[in-house]
Picture 1 (cartoon, rainbow, N blue to C red):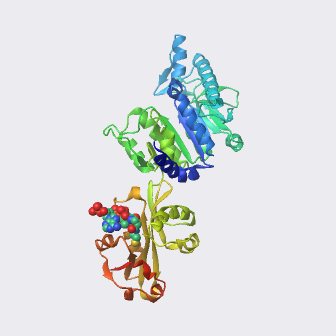
Picture 2: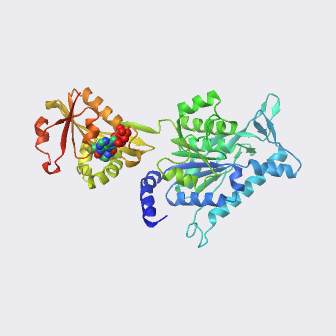
Picture 3: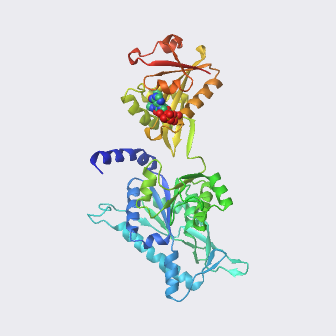
Length: 435
Ligand SMILES: CC(C)(COP(=O)(O)OP(=O)(O)OC[C@H]1O[C@@H](n2cnc3c(N)ncnc32)[C@H](O)[C@@H]1OP(=O)(O)O)[C@@H](O)C(=O)NCCC(=O)NCCS
């Protein structure tokens, strides 16, 4: 990457750095990730997120580690209706595997060699009895013994450690008030922790991309409703179906967003969190992109969008103060928390006219009908306010408006109070559309 591209990339990640700082993310990965020679890269990326002020709870799975230990002892993990049965011998393997995984993860987080990405970093990792479990019990005559379910998450305990700046590490293990240890599913622990913490994001690193059986393309995003419909249709294989179900459960219980990421993609977490479209599957309650009235919180995003256009002279310069007073006139297109488009309707009720102002789309999102949708929304608002015409002053986009029903007009057609504050030097074209 040359210097200019590097600088551009770094600047582009700036809004995400701000957006993620101080947020709580739960990151879950399966035991296979731990066995991968590339696992240290994942830890380095997690350390980087920690450095950017993201509060993290990590949950690891242990399936291949447990299976290998059982095999070495000539035993095998028994399943009944998709759920594993943990007998006393299997529980020993679970404990051993969990201990070893914990030590390995802690060791990687402690790395600080001068030539490694962890140089100069000191990250504390906290583990503990944060997960309270209960036995699955006997089902249809089968005793699941030490296979458990999450009963409760010690939210306060985890929050205390996060507040102190530690990364919290959870094993797929829970403790019961009777003093017993239970083997849990890592995904269940991750969902329960994310729900208890009301995490901003749950990131599940998966063994394969999230796609349906009929389409090889990974799915970029799903609303909860769409995900449920696909689950009902049996559109996924068993593995993907399990992750999607976990995501739906988490979102329904208040987790902001769930991301399913193929862990085989190097830097999957960074690509997902610091680029506009990410690389994984986002599952959220709300649609990924919305067109809604702007709020004061959107002002930094609007400024970021319009400042380059102001510098080029395409839009008239607006100060932050001016934006604050007029924010009620603005509509924004928001994509994954970022403002990618905006437009304003300034009403002149006496003249029964409205001005469409500050229409702008981020360059990456032009040419896909968003400008048209913003225009339609502004027209609808103008009609609701009893306005009979919409005018626009433009220097570069006159044809865009002409193609959408605007007609050339003159300054004399504008409301008096607007005429008095026109910057004639801009030599803008006036266009008017009757509503
Ligand atoms: C003008 C703008 C808002 C259009 O948004 P958009 O989401 O790309 O618009 P749509 O997808 O609805 O329409 C795209 C069509 O408009 C055309 N178009 C884009 N900018 C245009 C312009 N300045 N003049 C004429 N046509 C234009 C595109 O070529 C495309 O047409 P095509 O599909 O036939 O090639 C966007 O290009 C933008 O933000 N431009 C910079 C700011 C600006 O000029 N704002 C107007 C200030 S008054």
